[in-house]
Amino acid sequence: MSATLARSCRRLSVFRTRPTPAAALRSAWRQWPALDSKAFSFQSSHLRYLATGRGDVGGGEAEQVSETDFHAHGDRTLHALSEGLDAADLDCIDDLGFDDGVLTVKLEGGQAFVINKHFVTRQIWYASPISGALYFSLQPDHAWRTSEGSELTSQFLEDLCKLYPEADSVTVSSLQP
Image (cartoon, rainbow, N blue to C red; front, top):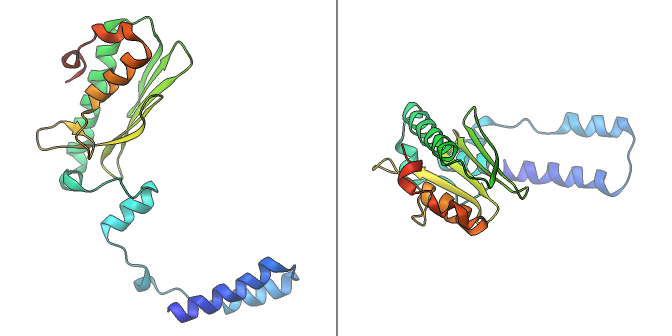
């Protein structure tokens, strides 16, 4: 398979270096070897890598969580974050939206936090203007943690307080389910 694929790739590289007529392209396409589906069998770890584009995503306890449990815990956590922030009534928050598993917290300075469920990896993905992108997996104690041990709610409050010290009045427990 690899020798056939290498020959085919060499054939295609010719087309990148000089223009060819459409007939020559059709002829080359007909000669392209049929792909054997058995040659492309992936393990779930490979699929997780391909689905996310990052090698540090997935693995650990997240693989053992059922899809139903993932959605239940994820929705409960994101809903608690949304309700807690709404109840805190912080002036620094311009808009707060929670729809279809995505929590968006828009701040008065134009920055935003986006926290969402990623069902392929069974993780909560977190985008912050302070710490960037982080990936939280559900742990056996029902907490969402990164591979480094950072907890979702604590990380969010830490980042929010760095931007707006007034958010210091919000407690971690007020944002947890």
